Image 1: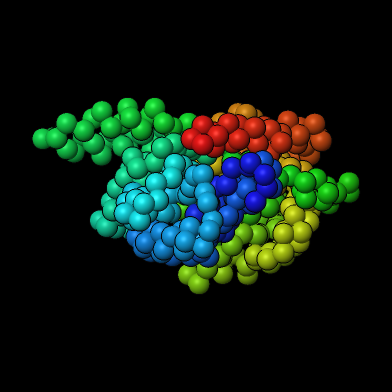
Image 2: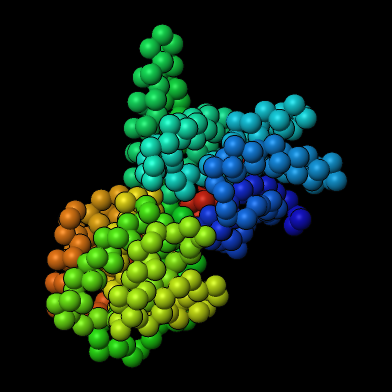
Length: 364
């Protein structure tokens, strides 16, 4: 450890995607010492249910081997109330901060799963157990507290309404910083004459790939010219439309599949002209912002967190994705370098690092 620098323990049961990018940025840009304990990004429901005792054991071993921490920061995929109670039993009582990349009150489920309520309850008790909580967007903050309000109203014979105010007092919105140093090296000066559309989201139902691909089928049938780069992580089970689209849109495809290497991923983004989202839920939108930094024009829904990230000109009304994409392709003008910078600079780590330093310092 370095001198008198504070030492923060990072506990992340889902170390992948935006969770990983966020923690990597914290460690690179903030003037603290960090120790990271993590698990791979899979089985999020199991992580929420069982990662806390596992993480508590790892924390106890670190303390027993001479490590000293000033605070703990975790995400909502960790049951923070259980973690804190186990550690307290072992005489470890550290300030605890929880960062909400998402909240289960607003997460759309593919099937009618009555058991999903346990995960909204875990979000609530994690927030209650924490000293400070932060949300990655105003949309995330608003939907969480709307869910909490309805949740607490169920307790008709218990006076618990004041807990919503208690949570509000320790909550704030902090956009996740993004490291744009690599994207800035990938900007291409020469672009294709035919606009290149980029999809760079997880291959899952909540990103609504059906709307995206069916719009492309229709535009292709109309003879509209475009090329296609499809990126994004996918798992063993993914929507069937990805298999069909790979065949139906073959003549348009430049790349189709996950890019494991970050530089390869960014080079593909830099070949794009338009990055789209048809997401049914989005608590922030890091993938779109990365693509914009690489020079892509964003076409995103006029809802979710996108309302606070992008001006109206980049947002399409509900139900009008196909028409909006067609119009954009017909009149397409690439983003200027100034536009790219203006849209992304507010979310860079150089802009956000000081805000995170103040947030973490508030409990130290």
